[in-house]
Image (cartoon, rainbow, N blue to C red; front, top):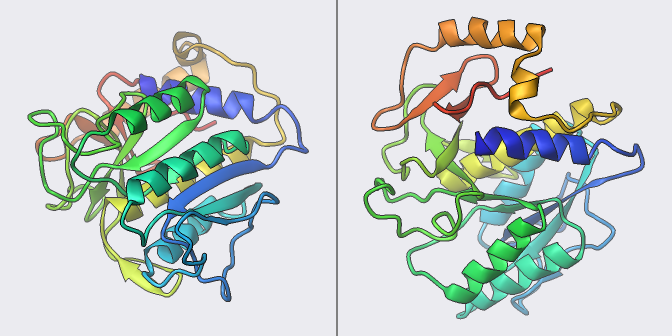
Length: 279
């Protein structure tokens, strides 16, 4: 239910004006400044490492281009924020998050994480979520059941985070992907080629989901959508029939997971979500 409400409210809020550009902060290892193909926000890209924005790692370049590929020319811009490459990467990450918040990012893509709770990071993320920002984060690549031991952050900080797991195919969890009830979406993040790199992980799955969310925003952009509750939406006859149609097609569960695949969108939803609506 939570993921559905996030997407509904997100679509409703950002379809108010045709002049509005969706700002997406990408907190990562930078990007290839000579060969970028994605739009940069007017607020620009910011390096929080002192090493320059150019990506010597390849991860950030891969992530930014995955997002753009799945955004499919949605009306948006990226705000690349480099955190990786210094000893205190947590401080750089928090500085990047705060910058994204203060400079109007609607979505934050954070294809990273690790073990180790930090109270200051937790508080900052809570404030960002309270401000109705959508934060999409990686579930982690340790193959762990986070229901038994939720020790991967920022994924485990708050249930409002959109935590993304990695599929190796449309129906199979990649064995390296963390899983559990906190994982709200699943995408194929295995051998994803973009930006001159082919990489695998929940990082790539996270970027795919962010791109698809941007694309959904783009499809609905010209419309004026009123905010509706989930119950009201699912009572609309056309949508109610679509729910029944899709439910009949749902046959397989992901291994050790409570998620289902919706064949039409290839997105995963919780049992409690009635449908991830596509108008």
